[in-house]
Length: 580
Image (cartoon, rainbow, N blue to C red; front, top):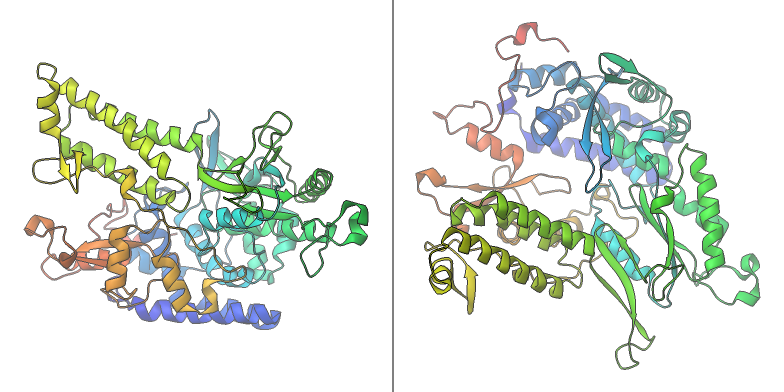
């Protein structure tokens, strides 16, 4: 039997990617017969099965979450056993109900956690189905898709608002994952019989709640590897149905034969969707209202409807129906402002910045962290705050965030002053400032320790415009150089990882395989810190997470053991009797 720690992951990943690329190309040609043949080939291949198992048992953050059977944290032998036995022809098991709170709401989101076997089988099915559907999905669909992000959706909105101010339908689909009709979804997937029967069994397997299994003919359980792809398939066609309602000419204006010549030239409606959130933009209010009615009828066909309290019509430049100009989307505020002719020939500018809710929520998280660490050392506080500051700043660095960054740094300064003064109530303010603040690159108010550990400022993050993905591009098209460069410049790529990426020419320092979209990357210390290694670039390398696990597992007497962060399986020592 093959050993987990001797698997040649470079060879395995190349084999799977070649098959996925061929599926993508066959789907582009419309060659359904070849697509099905290649999908079946991929499903049976050892390489795909072992990658699916690695995804759910090693790379995924939910690897320590058990399904209803209690199985989690597989050791090496159990992973190999799962890969050998993995097939998609068996009936799906019920999912375990888990309720998690929604952000800033009293409501809770229902997650359905499948068994480890079903998670691996769904990950395997996704490897086969995703390349086919990447050729079909609409250009302005950005959520839950490889190599597409919220920043691409925001750039698409920015591009769509050029030229003239527009009315915007800002909408949210009510309980999208819970209400998708199974019959309509399966008909839409239109895959080969074995795959169809298996997906149907997963959808209808039910939810285990208080020792009883509840089943229904609707809903896609959130928490499974395949559910985001299934939700995208269900919502596929929203953009196309608007194009059919209002077809455009070569100049991208609505055909006069559809709306009449008296309305003049009106740009085609633009629909941009990220998962179950979408916006529809058009210059004419009457056309927007007709589009909304048409979309509601289209959604009803798949068992969905718009959420009234989250659906509204606004204008990008002027007040409308009591609403202020602009709208919030994915944490950003998008709005147009009137300016003089010297600033813009068209009389307005489109400004995108962090939304007030996003700023308030971030500041609240920082304040809560400071409150929890009132008695902690300064170094511990800095280490707790830095990831939050850097992560949030990186997310918003592609828009007009400079003033927001300055405001947050100013507010944080007052919070840290209160934290420091509380610790030394008997000392003067000058003494407190000298103890906790120093000078760094000309800034005399840098919150730092005596040994040089300093608090990151939001303003340290440079504003850098994000370049939107090309409309119908996909990582499965094989243009590795294009995707490699995009990953390096992604807003969420930290400066340290970006520098290591450039030094290593976009390749993992362990397996020498090119980093691809979706890879989990980690920074590795060549000389461990507990052996005197430092956080300098000479001592750092960028690795895949699974390569990082392999490096650390070889450091125990030169032999492979468990990953350093892996919990022991509750079945450890009973591999021979282990049954899925």
